[in-house]
Image (cartoon, rainbow, N blue to C red; front, side, top):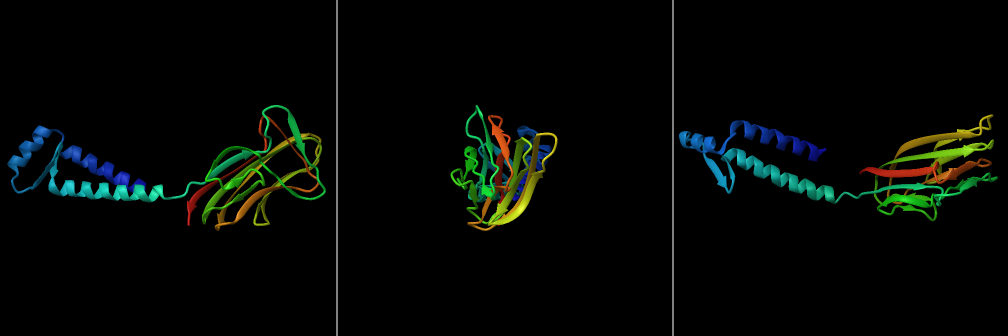
Length: 210
């Protein structure tokens, strides 16, 4: 937000500068005619001293904000349940809940998602956005739940119905401490289906640190 404000201020200041000093020749003429307005000249930069001072201060602020932004951790991932681009696979049903392992990783910036366990571990304290999708193509019940540290947060669920193909998605924005974990769990006695179309996905991104 600070960076956006600074850029807007810079654009406004530059707009003001261009309006008041449209041509270099007119600048020299006006400076000669107005002796009580001090001027600052550096290479191609010619402007009243107060304007140039503000520009220099603004440049310094932008450099500092750039340094701070570069220090913010970047965390984002997207993974799918099925690894192969061909064939198909049914997962479940099982008589107990199981943690789903999304093995095909498309993005894993920060390496906070583990494709071996299916668990995302927060590397920094902050607010995270998690989303997922689920699909079935049988008469079995479908149920997939988002968990945080062993606690169920949200669920997608479809009971046995006449139509066999159903899909659903859900999302949650969660505050996470360092080491907190988020993962997806297959509901007991339910089933999901996948193939190269990647119907079942799990994604997360750090919105901002705290």
